[in-house]
Length: 132
Image (tube, rainbow, N blue to C red; front, side):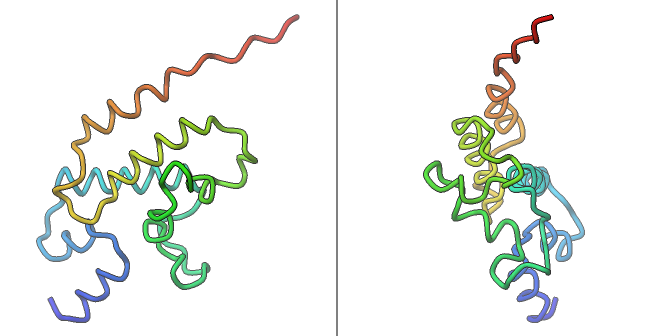
């Protein structure tokens, strides 16, 4: 692989694509990364790569990662939600996404851990049925 290709992979910050380009193999950890990108898409309402955005904001992972802490996550929540979401649930989702998209594959959790971390988010009380 040429130096240009290495720089191109690094600049896009999609390690699973780079690993696939170099080895021809995807791994469970690259699947976890991809799932983390899907979580970020759900959280932000943005595409993984959007060339219409200003430089530095085109890669969803690069843009969102510094905003995934509990005190900053509101900065990247999809504005279409208009603040109508459980803040602790969003913070948990953001924390799990941050673990999934870590650059170094060995630091990413296994998918079973991701599933266990997200399960409590499904246990929200059902909305009250409308009265007839």
